[in-house]
Length: 216
Length: 217
Image (cartoon, rainbow over the protein chains, first blue to last red):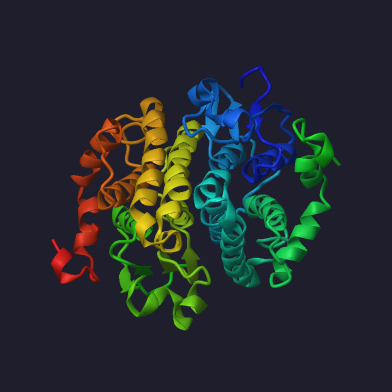
């Protein structure tokens, strides 16, 4: 174990960064935040300095145990394997598969299609309908899947990596004015999770880099 | 408990995500049945009521195994790894496992979804080629850099891993969209090395039950 605290490169409003923040807090890992502003200066993720750290030029990036890791789910799985309690994945392989399937649906199937760099490419007037279409389409599938997997949370009654993906994606949905009434299960689980401390302290409105006008 | 029937893989010959899972099944010596889902014919067979009832994500690959119906290629592969652990597709060391997952996610989350069929449909026919090329080049540029620290014979060290299962099909997509691979010598080298392995050959899009005659090897 390195003596220094882990460092999380994060943007307050990045849903991918929020997933990792929740994992770190749930596992009781004290970490330092280095904010990376994705908009200012043409996007600080493109600086030579950050690019040398993470060639993917994305947040979240986590410096931990002498390692520099990108990709939120790879980071969370690493935290799970090295700090196993409390668990973020169930013990049963079939339930673990459901957790990963839901996480991948969100982290691979929805978020990348509506992230900043894709929205830049579709052009300003197309951005809102594009984001809404992508999120609605993904949430429609997710709502169906949750009928078989969900208990109190996405998979059964324990908070898992899937829940860490759900809440930030719902925040994105709200930001793009997606009507959530067709997705009552997503809505219910989101509300239940937002009541938990780990989801509150890591919220975009309470980050070191949250702009004053958006601060809680 | 193991089901007595063979696992069923819903697959499209040219789907890079399906190819990843085919390789995993073959590497692990799992006999499976293929049910082809044509993503183009009939407006896309993945949108049929029947398939949608099976997998609400309406995507391939979908795997029916052990009484389970699973979507998302990496979730499928991790399930196979946990239930049929040999030969391994993820190293033992957590730091190396993290590298494998990071590379897999870069491809499966960061490149492929941005150039899949449904997104290309939305960008419009004249924009499709430049869009796909841009997305793949951008991702491969980052991947080439990352491989400088992780690669040995393969993406992570000298053992075939889930990252390699993602790499080869993505390179095939790159070639299909005429992306120049010369800026990515490490990706190129690893791809060639992997394509020489039997599991990558028998699962190749040109050798599938649903490969059209004109594309068959």
